[in-house]
Amino acid sequence: MASIGNIREMFPGGNTAYGFYSFYDYIIGPEANRIFIIKGGPGVGKSTIMRQIGDEMLQRGYDVEFHHCSSDNDSLDGVVIPAIKIALIDGTAPHVVDPKNPGAVDEIIHLGDYWDEKGIRAYKDTIIGHNRQIKHLFDRAYRYLAAAKCLRDNISVSVESCTDKAKVYHLAYDINKALFNDMPISDKVGKQRHLFASAITPDGIVDHLDTLIVPQAHRYVLKADIGSGSSYILLDIAKAAETVGCDVELYHCPLVPDEVEHVIIPALNTAITTSSKFADTCTAAYDLNTCIDNGKLNALKDKISKDRVMMDSLMNEAIINIAAAKKVHDEMESYYKSNMNFEAVQQAKNRLLERILKYSAN
Image (tube, rainbow, N blue to C red):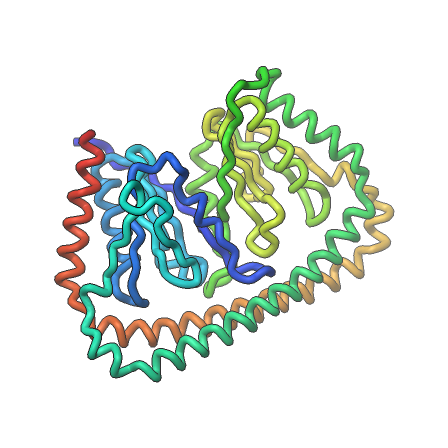
């Protein structure tokens, strides 16, 4: 009997200062054998189907990626089985996904085929009202997150004004030298994959770093504050990995996706992270505080502290609104669930699993 596969968990999209931010194009690359885009309303079984198929493939010994939903972190927006290059993706709003290569690679699995349209239409006005309310709550949340970014920018500017950039560049050089050990430039450029390791969810900021970084044999920790240069270093590492032909995964800041918080280089079995949870088990740690003039920073500490308090308060308000939106969404799911033929949905799942298993036999 095959051993159980390994699970990696991440978020392909996030609730950010820029609104909903999608990295769905990176769930699986152009090398995919098959992409099943699952469509249907809330509560019709999209996440359940994906999780059941993912669990089945795990039991058969395949490594599986579970891509979580940032607006409901108990639900899935995607499942990837890397060994056979298969992906299942939720193709409904706010992350609408449609086939790019219909038939050749992508196809739609429409769970609307198994609902009672008449029964759902009886709730038409209520569903429209709920969707309007959900949009209003998310719009409020995104304004709070945009305001939180302004406070974060204040902190970043303050810290950056106290940072010796030349020291940051030297540190980046030292880390790259340690990582790549004078590896030659490759004729093949490595590929980048962009995702979120953490997200702003109805339950607060949730991360799945333990499934992404702990398995890495080599873990490097950057001890860094906002604005101290960690994102620059991580982007520089990713670029260096590309030049030596290594594919690289970049995991972005859940509030400001322009910035990177973690980099994983699978070919080198290496992760570089700003998370302090790995400080006691890391291969090496690099302290960016050594690049900061503490005298200058101390003069700004009261302003920075005030900005942090306001930023945290705004983040909390955003989370309250996202949680309220989920509550309305959960109520709306009930109108669909009561009008679904879930026995037929399970039969569709079984047929889909049989098709996927045929790829594993090839």
